[in-house]
Length: 521
Image (cartoon, rainbow, N blue to C red):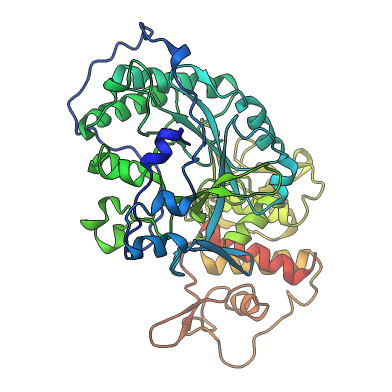
């Protein structure tokens, strides 16, 4: 993402640096530690000749990337630069290794960034390649839109390629930066890009720019850049775009951007060579808080569908949502079961005002939602709730999943509680694991498993906390015998079921998926 001059500034000797513990790197708001700056947000920038503003592009022509990085004449610097980072794949999971062979990110995703300077892109081929996500250049300076942005945006949407955007900065003060943020927000809004659609962030690209007549205004102190970044973020946030982050390169981050505040907002770093030397705040961070940065490791990559060379980056795979849910990734327990749940329409999650869809896997499952899950797992059979008997005094047509609750009652899967006032369903109550076992056993019987209702346990219980006095103990042990429930292995080696523990949504995804596989339906 740089001009010729900027690429030269990236030329640094690669130094040996220990690998850091992996912590998911996500953009987040950081309190402003710099002096507040008053910004006139209603007035346009004046006296700026944007026709003379360079259109930044990749045009490193000073030699190979090894030469670009190995500016130190020492043998170590040159030999380190000659060792290239590389990828490996196992069981469908990508791992990215640095030039020494050590694992840098695992699992990782391969990301490219593109602009109008990538003159020929066959997006169908890109979508079929091993590229997992794309960062689109949106523009630069004030209101300078990348000529290919609209077409590239349409393409990544057409082929369902996760994407982020970047805006190259020429800001020399906070007022200019605010207008850059406003420019990007205007563009995203014009093409209906929501904060939720930005799977990767909106990156503020901070580099060592040159611009005739303005180069002497270029910021050189971290305090100045703190005001610039805060102004950009403020303009974006005012329009609802909070998924922002900083992109820069190692030398710049260690000099002009050498601020803990700026480093905390930085998630994507460029350095071409065997290793990424930038460590940010890791020197003072606890082991649990040490971060690994998304690494743009070459500008000489090749990708099917893209003519010539292209920037390649390794990103943390946890940034890539699964199943359409922003809060589900490869590290989420039962992630593939959640993806299945989404693909079958059994769960659609929650959609926020910014378009973000979440699954909320650690939320407890309440009984009225359980009714909907079971109804959908059964194939959403035809059922006219208006003609059905409602046995529950606490269920009305305004109750969420009213139809599914009455269907559940009509099949005998749920019987509710008898009270002095009548039978209650208690739809807002969370489901505990032993009750869930009963629901699933009855559902299996309803869906054609004739053995489910008749099955009886034999021998000793596999669960130390399940006896013949445990409510629904037969159904609990049936669930285990069918591989639907596995329980926990305790420190003493025993296995427990924890029947009174609340069923959370990510565990429910696993239960439903396993039951479906068992039934073969």
